[in-house]
Image (tube, rainbow over all chains, first blue to last red; front, side, top):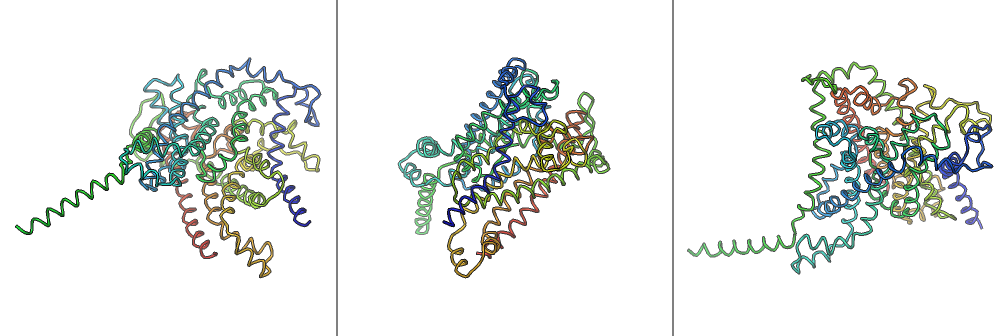
Length: 272
Length: 312
């Protein structure tokens, strides 16, 4: 009986801690579905009489959002795939070489403010003459994605059993064959974690885009920020745009909660 | 003559051992090389270049000339820089303390069993995954002095309306509230990982000895999770020092320069005034501040690990 009361008490305590998150996202949805009259009402209205779905239509019609969405997909997708291509073998190599010291490099990369990469790379991209394309953003997003992938994969390969690899090695398989045919298939769950975290932190990145993006190469976070500064601020479409930007990430978080928690607690990584 | 035979056999066995060693320990370096090249290109090169720029007089669009330590000396007497350093340290201290406390309490709750735990934990983690700019936008609307929902909620409990991010006195605490909202979950996850590794037995014997819940927490749980708390604190410190998206999107360092942290000042110097030489010097000093603070915390961590072992 007392244990039942205990559990109910804990449930409500947890609810108190989760409520700022719940209330924030509810309010965000509410703002995005209200007409200007309702958004300007006092006292504020949570659920309006008329839902303003037109806010979402407006976001896509007036602001080139489909282009920016596609830019975000290209930048995050390419930067993540490149990071996996480079980072998974690197994580394997570092784990097998037992070169734990190389983790220091990743820690230093984490301590470095993103802006100190931006100034030199901005100048470099200007000299090379690729500033109008998506490539500068893809390349600089590697600063975020590669350390995440390497970090997660080192942790993962350190826990996978060596016996199979040693057996394959004695049977005469080359290092590459051992990696490709033995280690890689076992590491799939680790790769999924690395992929998800890399996608999230690359998708969310703002500072690189705000410096490097031109009108045609904006990613979603930059596009949303520009809406704030240029438009006569009307809250409905603004909140709708914010929701469109962050929805893919939130959906991914809900579906892959277990992997994300595992990856974050193991490596405790964050891009930026 | 007879001496050569053992020597030769020695050489042969050594050769055989070597070839076996080669087969037993494959060459793993090729796996690492592509990553090293990329790290060199996008991390090491910018660092070298930043150091070089920092000793030059260099504003974009104008000619460049060698300046020696001039930029660094300029920093030392730049009042705006010192103010931004104070803003950064204030912001960081608050943005570490609040999530550390709340995250630890949340972890203690989520470590126990109760209905809908998985779902609630999932929702609790969502703020840290949400896109910071989108989050900043909605918070800006909620902070609105006339139409914002927060002042309405305050009025329900009889607290007068606040100006939040629009007042020089409340802007930093308001930004810290957003940062805390977003990053408490990360502290919670790290501490939760620590709690999962705590053994049950000491608690059972403590209970038999009549220790109450607070004593159990203070003398058993706390020392055992101390290393995890230190990791959370180091990560939080680094991230709070580097915080950019939320501050830039919500206030751009304003009102005036009341919330201008080093990172924001650095951004303005390099990309609004195009003074890349001075900006680079600032980046170098900023990096040194981050490394120094992390290093102090790492030293503390080693101490706390030692205490943690003793606690067991």
